Length: 370
Image (spheres, rainbow, N blue to C red):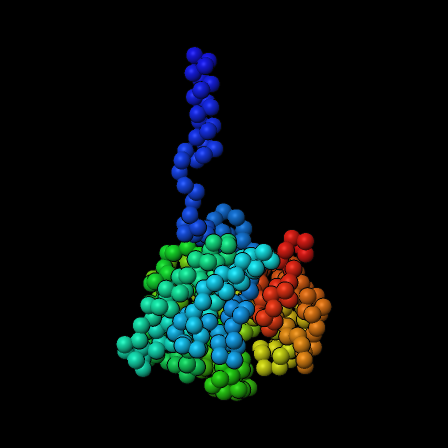
């Protein structure tokens, strides 16, 4: 009897060691779903700190022809997965767990307004490939909808076009699938400079156009949000604002964006380059780095809505004419990350003013730098 029991135990041990002959889980099974628990992001049951990079183009891209990913829709920018996979492998080794990727409105459906025969099947297939390569390396993708959307098309009459041509096809394609951090519904919708430079911040009360511009855009993004939630109800939503305060401003607007989305995300640039959203030169902020970043985060927490916060663009130029060299870049990226951590934010996504991934993200996301 003891011999039989010993044999049975041995067989069980061998079976577990070999997983009883079953194959290992495939990478296609995907990353754990991301959810929010109060001010924290969770990946499955584990707290998730976003350590990200805005992935604009592969390292080997000819920027004179291909300054941004076109997912095969532009003949000047042929789709090559291998350089993207190599970049993701390098970023993984540097501690990156998220890439933010812009989905061009025209590439992903908007071109059908001018050409009804245009097909987004190929860009969607390439997007699937990018998400799969990221997922193999434990990297989430944060897709930004409506990139390059026309800046004068936020009227209620424009909702149907934006939804039918772009938002619904993209969201339906990816709804429920693994690998996405959240839906980023629009990039810097609060910066109205392309319409009128005086509304570079929709909260500019000194110019009468800005308040109705803000209200129009708030209603537009609410309509986009509600449809995305209908199509992909479990996925988190955010809107990356140019200024953190615009989640609750302008005052007396029809609605607050803070009450709409699941995650607060916003960008931080101090005063370099001049044509970016500039906190140091802003009438509302103006205290410099890192005080303005900390204030933006503190004010969002003070709303009492208990939602995760993410700095979805943080970057500083280097090189000719810039205020920082490589040493100052490393110092201030680390300071920005620490400021976000001190404010209990859920992470940062760096902006690649530097195409060289030895400079960005450098070692700020690796354990030795913490």
